[in-house]
Image (cartoon, rainbow, N blue to C red; front, side, top):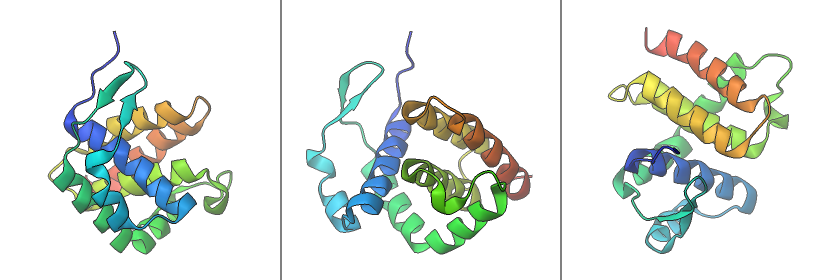
Length: 148
């Protein structure tokens, strides 16, 4: 039986999609935030309409990730091996890593285990190759530095 996503899980999924949209289409963050009410998102595992986004969490996360993007990107680059060049990573993978890194580095009120599970799950939504394992490994390494 597929797992039902909670409000924060859905918010993280929409966050990753929004960061990707900003990167690819250059959509302004305020436009994305303003469009949340009219956004239609389907949970692919259950094919049901999702409207349970934590808008205040979303707004906080997206604005903070944008504000700290240079710091986050520099930290990501420290953790990727020579096999994974940051500039050649898939844009959706970068969005996943930026979101997860931000939460692990700056959201100490959320368990790092929850953060890792959530973003690995999101990674599985987009990738069937090595990316979910890569996401898990890099987030585990980061959490050992920032949370232990």
